[in-house]
Image (spheres, rainbow, N blue to C red):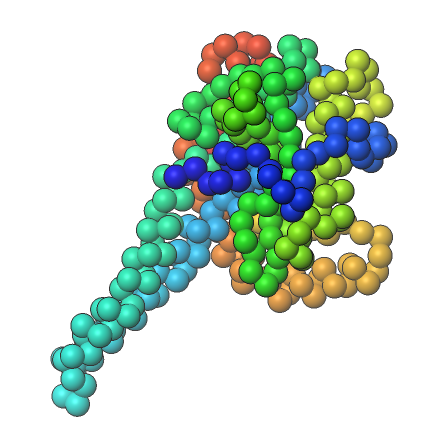
Length: 303
């Protein structure tokens, strides 16, 4: 089933549509999940890329110990006479559904593509992405796309994740297809806060200027820290899952170090899943027509 946020335009104040004139030009900044950039082509990873592998890693980390626990508890009646045999079906009903559930989620992630990037070609004015319907590459003109900030999922006590999503509309404003751009951002409230909106708007503004300006010499080229790879080292995978905080404030730096210590185990587990997905999961393939238009540098490979 296609998630609602992928197939419906924002319909209320909490799901804010972009104002194409904001933010100001000097605030445009490249995303930290760039794949390729030159004077004609900009290739950006999807907003799920930083999360890729999280269900795999936690599914294995939780599911396998639960299976081991079940076999251990089920064996107790055979070795300890006081342990009743009715424990076996009870533990089967309690432990196995949870174990099977998390392992099923891990398997679903293994079957998914490792990445679903978007290409912006300023020379031709085309946007290339992989359709949410069948995963095949599709091409639409830049002017056909509408961009919005949308919430991706309920985030519980920590808030909600937001992303920049592009929609291709028909003449009745119905959604034909959609794609996400760049990073996601967690908002600490259940409405689109100004910080979340501003940061995501700055990422979109970078793409908008790349596609619409006649001269992009004033546009800041992506730095080394803006790029991600489908062939990362394990350390790089951990940094993708939990990016470093860039700030000149000593307080923020100290808080960042403290949080890194507290979240080291989740970061380690998430990094392992991301590394495995990048290394072994399938990657989508651009059509030859798109490769001819944008150049061989856009070809994706994790081998």
